[in-house]
Length: 188
Image (cartoon, rainbow, N blue to C red):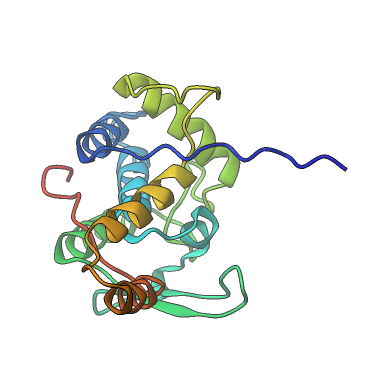
């Protein structure tokens, strides 16, 4: 049985994440919630390192006091993710805009049809936004992936880890909970 080769993760530069968010904010239709949905969605992926499915499953009630509750993770556990102040403000701003939309859907991220955002639509939009932003295609693959934002988060967290085996172990343990990052200074 042959093993499937995993794609090498792409590690975004902070400037590339800024470009991604700038171009997400330009999405249409004009005057809709969509550009704010994707700017907030991509921003949360980049600042928290959460999985795409976890972000898509978030409900409005899961955001309280600057903390996100992630329910039933990949390993069927729940965890809390404290957000950086700028991420809290950006999410609160998005939720204010979202509250103006008439819907019974409890999910944070909504499609233009006012239903839970689908995984497939986030992939398609991510590719369009990356292309519009002029982000490079990864050598040996056809495109960047949303999951690369998670890899970027992990790499940046490791780069900021203190020296020494014990300190890195403690840092990695803390990372499994969360290490907030700031990408929202110019994207609201």
